[in-house]
Image 1 (cartoon, rainbow, N blue to C red):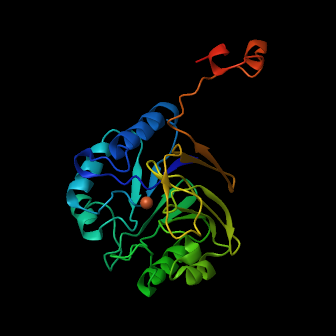
Image 2: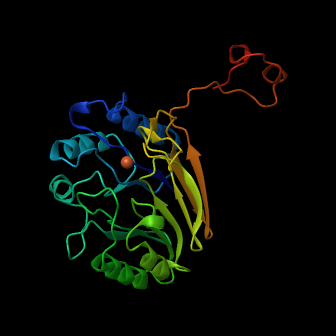
Image 3: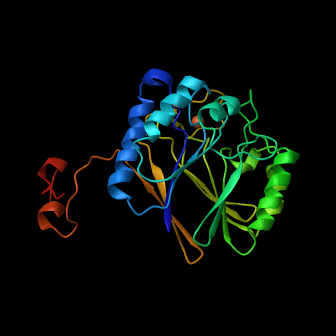
Length: 265
Ligand SMILES: [Fe+2]
């Protein structure tokens, strides 16, 4: 079974450009690629900063773009999102008893838990005791299933992240998150984790500097393959339009420039 991990789409109202790019155009390009080349996926998961300012018109724009995606999809909230505004436009997305946009779902023998780490008005996230208690209940229900966790904020500096790590260690096979606008792969407190580039602008890898810089590094989404308890994630550069060629072709091997390549479909 495989699914797609997309993050930080920052959709704007009326397709207003952001940092010189079209958020709508970028997400539509990702969906075109998925509809064409990933027809066997179980779902697409979008890990927050769904829109740029958390407004109703932005969520309406997102809802319109989602119409073009053929696969089932799931949404969660990031720091650029607005919980009430999101719920107004997407009333069918489940919430927990406190109104946090948190829910779980099962595909085959895998259980997927979706967390709400939005702390409104702040860019840092929060897993308060109410949300942690909800997670504990979900983990208990998921016992015996391969379990995966989705959230927007990287757990490393997330308030409540340490408590979450103690709860999920040995129970959750992989954490998927966004927020960094950069790919990150590794493990944290023994828990495997990964993030992907945004579909839009990226953050330059100089996180220690005082001024954060953006860039137009090419976007990717993650194609996550789950098989027999193994997790393999292929970052896919969905805007790549570079020439395709046979690796065995002598003419390709000897090409002096891209223009000299014998092209293949
Ligand atoms: Fe973001």
